Length: 435
Image 1 (cartoon, one colour):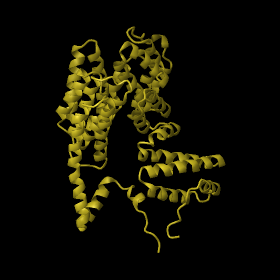
Image 2 (cartoon, helix red, strand yellow; image 1 turned 180 degrees about the vertical axis):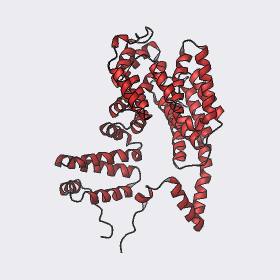
Image 3 (cartoon, one colour; image 1 turned 30 degrees about the vertical axis):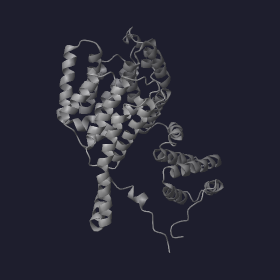
Image 4 (cartoon, rainbow, N blue to C red; image 1 turned 90 degrees about the vertical axis):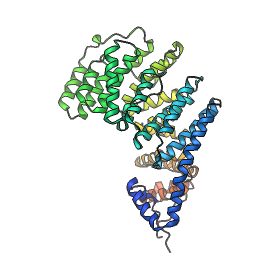
């Protein structure tokens, strides 16, 4: 008698709504399943309550214990969001962001461990707001307070909150930005307003406004590239070509001189934004006490470039690794599609604490090695399969590895050298279904 077909690979191809409909229909026919689902739903409330309790006690702990407790809260938020919880998680996520922000003003976070938690908290708060939008004007007021009156953190990207803000929230931010630009001829608040004006133009899709804002900046390669990308994305190809031509023939002597107040390494970074110049800027700015302000704008430029090319994404990841911000580097690698070698490097470190997250990276690596079609690459693919098997076990997904390996072998069954290397690596090849 043949064993039942493992349906999980197929089920993972379905969207969440289809899966929800299938599961709900089955629960209506199966009282035990319905009760189990209701019990899981009920536990979400206790999970949220426990998360609030952890925040209550976290402030009494030292840096390491504080980071660990906040990390547990963030894990709970992510798990509930990933599961599609109907609970309103925005208040908990907002409290976590505010709590970490206040803590960073009171402690010496040289390692950046607590700051890493803040970046992740903001991302989860944005997801929670999208899932269950809060009052748009209240959300806008919070963003404006952080941007104009905060200590320089957290870093907020309007695009992440755009759908939750809606027209009302966006209008509130636009009104404040316009007012600041009218009243502040210079200074930190004006710089913040100018950055938000650019983000608002991007969020609203106002191509003409965005191009005008970018064109008004001092001539730089990255600014010109962004203008070209914006015009091409809008289908305005002839304008994009014309702008690119003007940028190529621009006399560099006409570029605006660097403000004397900036560190010398700021000029190096602006001319060549890489991980090396970013970290040099960091070292110099830490000595002058200006890193908080410098980091926000420098990191925004690296992220902007990362969205346009894989090499730039790699530079962003290496810059974050240089700050010992491994979690943030991982998220950047995933979001901006860093190169496979960089993602594998990150996965080797991340697989210890977060094995399930690294499985797709190792699978991509195996496939890439197989496509090379040479004996050494097949041997390395087999070694990576051993590593992948270990990662699946750590993640409690051993059965999925067997299913994955069976499919892989079936697809590449004619590559006899590959199959021989897999067997030589002492990896048990599953028997075909029905065999």
